[in-house]
Length: 232
Image 1 (cartoon, rainbow, N blue to C red):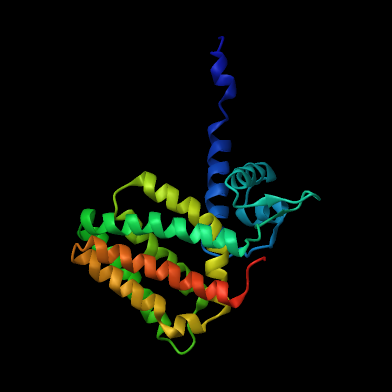
Image 2 (image 1 turned 45 degrees about the vertical axis):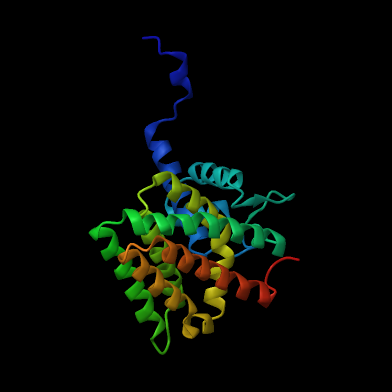
């Protein structure tokens, strides 16, 4: 039987699934800050950890390079890009605009399930921060969970997709800083901002929700810039 020419371009479903899974898991490592700026990524090691052949990993890495979440060095090594102060400030401005809008929409569009998810995430991170020895990797994960619980409540899959793309770039910088500087968690700025955002969304106050997310993002960004951990 002759197949339409277009079908020659379709990959086998099992390969597509493996590639998508590899992309999702590597993207989550970046978003969650488990890969640091400048850190090299071994394709072979990633394939072993993910339990797949190297081809799906290579495909996933190619997508992440296209997303500018990873970069290929002249010696063909793959690493997480370094970020300059100017690039980080530009990214921060965009995040404030887009994530602030998502929080405002969440205050208007949320339902009871959204409120419950936001409350669980906010309470879990607050409880972690109050421990004498907080689990910093868990706190980083809870921070991401809270933010995306808010953004999912905006009821806009396209908006969440855009925000995930921003976090691919911001995650390694922001979350690495939180893990390396536990006093940020103990100080409680993020905890306070999260509580304000939760309250605003519960009350349907779009302006306060937007302001709370903006304060959370800008506050963390200023700490990161002041520490001089960026590349020039």
